[in-house]
Length: 269
Image (cartoon, rainbow, N blue to C red):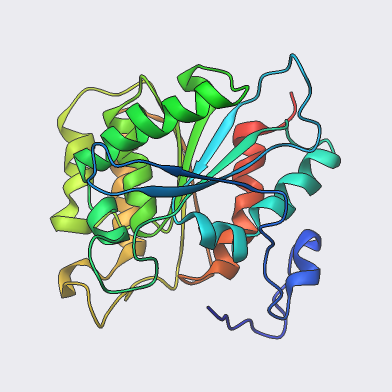
C-alpha cells in the first residue's frame, strides 16, 4: 500500500497530485453484482463510462482484475479521463472486477481465481463479458477488448487471451507471475501454434524475489520469468511489446506504465 522512491525519481506529470498517498475515487462508477454461475459465488464489478458517452457511439472495453486496487492505487479513472481529454487515446469503457475476499486470506480469493482457473475464464468470457456487452454500448469484437492485471492478475490476463482469443484479442500483464506452477503458462505458449492476439507486458528489474514469505523459492524471480516469456513469444512470432523498468513490484510502477499501455492499445491514429 506504500512505495519508496529515490530522490531523483521523476514522476509522470499526470501523477504529481498523487505523490503523497492520495487515492483514486469511486465517484461516477456504476456498481453491479453478477450472480453465481461458472463460479459458485457472486462477483461485484464497477463500470466507468467515458466522459462523453454519446448516443449512437460504441466503445472499446478494458477489463481490470483486482478492480478496486486499479481504481484506488492504479488511478485508472483519473488516467483515463486525462488521456482522453488530451486526445492521447480513444475513449473506452472500463470494467473493474472485484475478487472475492479482497486482501484477505480466506478462500476463494484472487489466488484461487487467477491461478490459471478455467472456471474463472468461463465466468470472465461467457458471463461477465456477455453482461457488459448486453448492458452497455461496446464494440462487440475481440480486437476491441483488452484485459489487464498485475502480478497474479497479469498471469490470468495472458491466459484469458491465450485461451479465448474469440473473446479477448488483447492482454496487458504488469509484473506477471509467469513462473507460477513451474512456468506453466510459458510452456503452454511454447507448446501450441501462435494465437492471433496482441500482447503487452512489462516488469521491474527489482522483482527477483517477489513474495519470498509465501511463494515457492523456485518462483520468486518474476524478472527472469518475464524474460523467459519474451523468449518464447519471439520464438513463436507473436505480436507483442515488452519493457523492463528500474522499478519494483509496486503500484508506483504499475500506475506509471498504464499510461504507456493505454497509448499502445488505444492511441489516436
